[in-house]
Image (cartoon, rainbow, N blue to C red):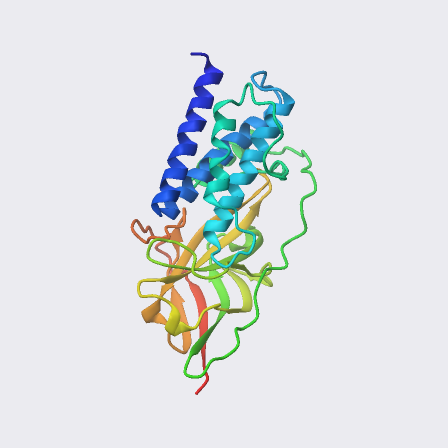
Length: 307
């Protein structure tokens, strides 16, 4: 069997693994597998020296990567109106199997994923190691980086309407302590509410880029409205805070660390929570503190109850 056929066989096995997880209701595992496959397909699409696939075949691979990401988005946001169903995704299986001979019109009106990094879970650490090596080898380099999208203005949502007897939670993200705070470019936070299996319960929100940096602190001073009444958040769920920043050497946004707050910690007033090493562990099984220094995420909670 040729190398290209072995590659296609691996893609097909990964696709089957993801759809099996998906059909069994193991959504976190399915999302991970879809992201891994999308990243591999995108790597092939972006490779300028790949003689194994024609430009038309690469375009098809890019469209498959788009569909995988669309399915991930559907699984991650239960309130999405633009759902991409598992049954639709499964229609792509024969296309993957017959990548070298497929010549029909693609079944969905999608475009290939834009030329950017798709990171498989846990892959950022390897890229950061590469970055350190590059920095050591290329010190003093003046190579200009291409322009990138403007800094995010955030995707924060307004407070939900009040309901009699129900409680809403506003979290003010005040600041985060990091030993290299001053070196972080365009830092922001991603906030999500996950159940015990790591599945999103609410729409995920991003803060705007932080307002200022001071010594070992990055200040946000921004309110986040949790998009579910406290009484309706299931037992064992947690609110996650992922600190992200732009890495110009690798031209992607990276998660630096994360923190979480469990439901029994919801009470009015200030709270300081610990920071953990990435990758973000939504199931909270293998946690590693980011640092032994006294550096934390500082929050303030406000509860709104309509009596």
